[in-house]
Every structure is written in structure tokens, then in C-alpha cells.
Length: 283
Image (cartoon, rainbow, N blue to C red; front, side, top):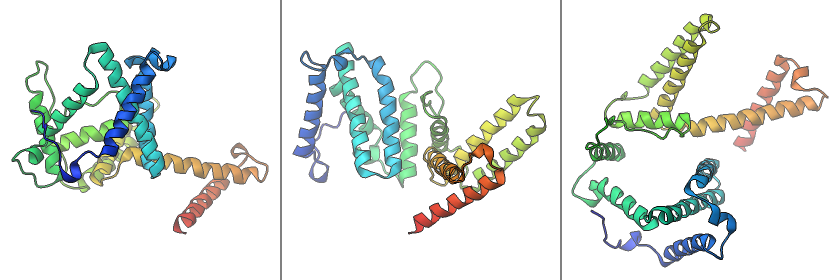
């Protein structure tokens, strides 16, 4: 059942929001129209998927940067692409924007009985578990077997996919009660990686699998600590690049490159980069 009630008070849609969405939709339809842009008129759902992926990633990166203006801009671009693709879907199948919005609203109302019905939940974790249970019940009538943890898109970044699978497993009770469990698992997996090293050359597949298990366990530890592993790995990579650039620049000042210096020299400059960054952060 769709909740057709008009929201009141703080939940009402403002005239500014309504006008802004109407303007965006109008721009989208103008671009696809006879007097619009040739490139936009040539696009299909298939040709637009790379742009959806790109804009989604750019939105995530903007949010991670903490830049408000950049985040709003990238999320706006992502919204436009979603609207544009729904217009393409409407042209192809006859069901587009209105149907998609209604289906999304129906699903949200149906999966939030504690908001739109008489259910009660204790906290956010309980609400998430309820969502997963309702989702599973909706799929119960399918002919093919469906796992309690569902599926994740194959194109998701591996860290995100691992996080979501673990999150879904936790929602059905398959989880440690606290971070001690996953921390012990990380230590166990490190030991298993170490055990494969003597045969890593002759049996590389086993070492690779143990490395995969270690990464999966590390993601689980991050999840228990409410840390986004994708974001933190991205930030760690950024720090590495920044520090290595410092090493390169300091060596260049002496007329040398990393290949022309020793590891000990580079380690010293690396530590210097870390110290300078911490001093900058503390100001």
C-alpha cells in the first residue's frame, strides 16, 4: 500500500524544493527533446551506466573529503543522472520516473512498519534487522533459493561488498557480540598467512586465499568499530601518496631519485613527512 498522505509540518515539501525538482526534470526533458542536445538524445540506459558509476564514486569521495559545497554538487549530479536514466526507462518501457518514485515510496513505507504502522523497535540495529526480515519475506515466493543475506552487486568495490555481506549476516544473528571476536580472527588470519609463506612460490593460490581471508576479517573488525573500511583505505592511500611525494621532493632537492637513495634514507624522510603532517593537524 502506498502512503498517499500529504506530510505535514517539518516533513512537508517546500515550494523551493518542488520548484527545484521541477526545474531539474524540465532541464532533463529539454536536453532529450527535439531542440535539445544531440549527445543527450543519443544516449541509452546502457551508455549511461559508466556515468552513474563515476558520479556515485565522485559523490562518495566528496563526502569523505568533508567539503560541503563539493558534496552537494556531486550528489546533485548523481540525482540528475538518476532522473535522466529514469526518463530513458520511460521512453523504452513506458514506466519511468513516477513509477520508480512510487515503487521506492511503497518499499520504504512497507519496510518501516515502526514508522507507518504499529510496530516498535528498540534502536537502529533492530530497525535494520527488521528491514532485512521484511526484505527476505518479500522474496520468499521466488522459485530460486534465496540466501538470508541476499546478494550484493558484483560491480561493488570488494571492500564495500564484504562490509555489506557481513552487515546482512549480522542482521540475521550471525555475528560476534563485540570487537574482540573479529580482532582475534584478524590475528588468526595473520598466522595463517605466515604459515603459507614458505610455500608461497610453489603454492601461490593458497597464500592468495589466506590474504583474502585476512582482508575479509579486517573489514569485519572495521565494521564492529563503526569504521568505513572503503573510506579509510582510500584515506590511507592518500596519506601514502602524500608522504611518498614528500620523500621524492626532499631527494630531488639533493639531485637524487628514490632509485638513487637507500631504503634507510627514504624511511627517515618518510618519518619526517609523518611528523610534519601531525604538526600541521595539531595547529
